[in-house]
Length: 118
Image 1 (cartoon, rainbow, N blue to C red):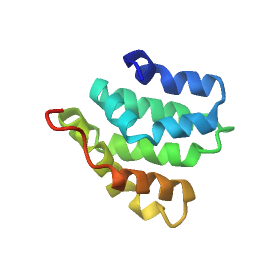
Image 2 (tube, rainbow, N blue to C red):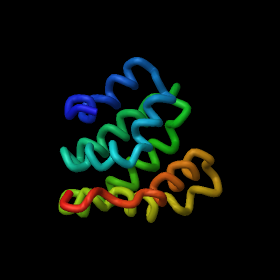
Image 3 (cartoon, rainbow, N blue to C red):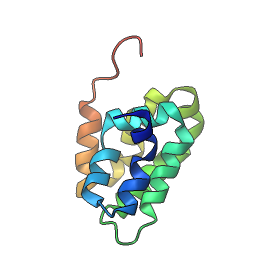
Image 4 (cartoon, helix red, strand yellow):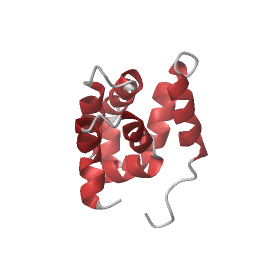
């Protein structure tokens, strides 16, 4: 995905009400890392923006992701590679209640990390 795509994907998917595609993007570890590397606050704002749509079936998990990363925003500004571990640490207690959180956590746990030299 291009830099423009990474930066504006959430806005355009929300505007088009493409909720399944939106959740695929925001639960993709590579996208999360790319967006955090560009602008950690932008990642949090993207998640909060998407969670603001009552018609979005993923509203609750998007809100949880945004809240989790906002709590660790200072850390993300120093090392954006901590996004997966920050989300796992903050969302682990919600996996029993939220099926979507279970899937997200599984993808985050499978992440082997960025290539060396990243």
